[in-house]
Length: 349
Image (cartoon, rainbow, N blue to C red; front, side, top):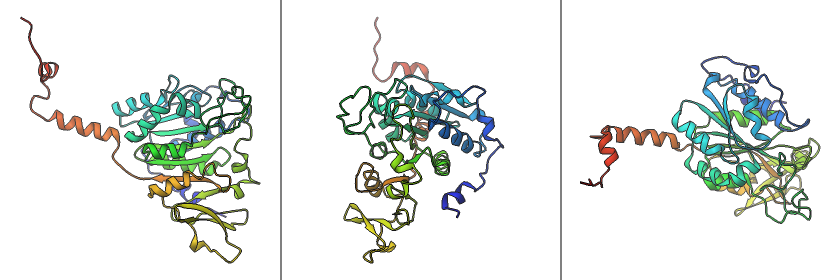
């Protein structure tokens, strides 16, 4: 049976040129561990950007440090492997200087939310027109298994042998709170949903953030199995589709309704509730997006997957261009001497 996502992915994209996923594969060996979710993310990214009709030389991939940050090496486009946590400010500079480019950032839960956390919230609030894919494997993998900002409380790692004491960051809720105009969640086992999310992100004008659950087979294997494996995910996750009620369960026999602002699971088979009583997803509703994002770590609620929020607002680079255009048209705008002197200056005689 075809799904809504099937229909959307099959829509042909209008573009300037035709490319294939192979055109974006760099002629080097991809060196992630066997079974790493990164292979799937890489493959789906290459597939989606090949449908956009954008010349290869118009793409730029920026990364920081971590397993995820090898990504630019594996893309046959322009790119930069930058400093730890600094991918977003560098990508912002590229986009502001060259707004005609399609600039993507690939980061991890450590790189993007720990040392790079401050850059993350401010790039989101500025609404710089970037596509940001975050590998969330809930552990520091490149440095051999320390706990990360998304590791669960009590999780045993190399740096928390007695269990993590911190409450984990909720990347989707953090992005929403910082003002990201597009926030979504996918996982490495679901190829079609990843394609849909990356396609939506690529076409979004503004800060587009996709949290991607990414299994680390070496240091945190199976961290997301409950929500991603075929035999458990229907009971423990719920797909968010704009305009559709939130229904889940192996037999689509459960749903989410709101009791005030509190989501609760109800049965659709006991005669008390029907689909008409359920919460209907609305991507433009910021309050609803927060409610859904905050279901993430609840033991009694399914894990939301899909697009939380998608709105349009002016991008940062549009504001920069408008500002430069305005002040460039003012009298004396091109007078370099006057600019260097400023309003307050004095001469030493």
